[in-house]
Amino acid sequence: MARYRCATAAIVVAAAILPRHAAAQQPGSAGAGRPNLKVLQALPESQLFPLMNLLADSLGVRCDYCHVQATPDLTKTPSNVGGWVWDRDDKPQKRTALEMMRMVVELNAGRFTVQSRVTCYTCHRGTTQPARLPPLPPAPAGSARTPAAMPLPSGDRVWTDYLNAVGRVASTAAGAIVIRGWDDRPEGRYGKFEVTVAGADRYRITLSTPDGTVNQGLDGQVGWSVANDRVQNLSAVDVARLRRIAMRYRPLKERPSDLRVVGIDRVADHDAYVATGTIDPVTTQTLYFDAVTGLLRREVATTETLLLPLEEQVDYDDYRDVHGVRMPFLIRTSDGAPYATVTKTVADIRRDVAVDDALFRPPPGPR
Image (spheres, rainbow, N blue to C red):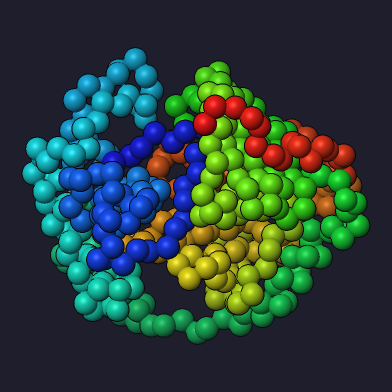
């Protein structure tokens, strides 16, 4: 199950599901550039490796469980050793995995109207050998009773408490917000970051590491990325994804139009109201609001795919007052790749900063 190297500021794209008959003929599909792909031909290329990461998590394995690594560079960190030959089918584990993937796709298509109700994790739960029987001794008699439903606040009430908790955002002037701090990742990877956000559709991040500097920007409907002096224009789905990333650094998040409270959970040792809403036809957002303070503790974006949902989680902590607005000074993001977990520790936040509009535009350079 393929765990890919996550570039310093890589974008994990949340794209729509393609119909099965489209397969490799669709531009941008995984099958278009991977002729040996046997099950996920119709999957968008941008979803392939994130999905493989989550598939590996479902079985509790690493890439080499199924894939051949012919020429690894052992002088590099474990997630960057490379040498993979993805299209080889030497290992029986890979052949079995392909059969299991076909089974999951066919089961969801035939029994659940193409909804991803059953996934690899449904049976495997982090092990290569799914359990067939419940553990013994059985639970005490009566313990399986359904608990009484807890009273929950409305979506309006939770959102109002959130707005009140954040503070006087409406008093913010027309200037930008500039956030600086440290970026820490597994395997000793680290760097410094600077984020600039202006309004709802202008965003710029600069990430400086010992290996170089990466820039990403959003200017209205235009998104771009620069690494190794090479400028890349982003697709429409990438731009939508980048806009959601920029939202992490704004004092207020956007409210989903269909927000509803569905339960209570624990986040960072705090009780939190769990609320869900729809981002687009295949993506659901789950928000966790502190039951005491009203502040946002966590958000999770879940995107349906051909095989199993992609997930990305953002945790917010260490809220502090910044000129009348409470903002998090610790932001942690994670998805299916353990080496891709990122902890951003904020050192400084400045509000109402005057910035040149050119900051958000793509720079000239080779493409």
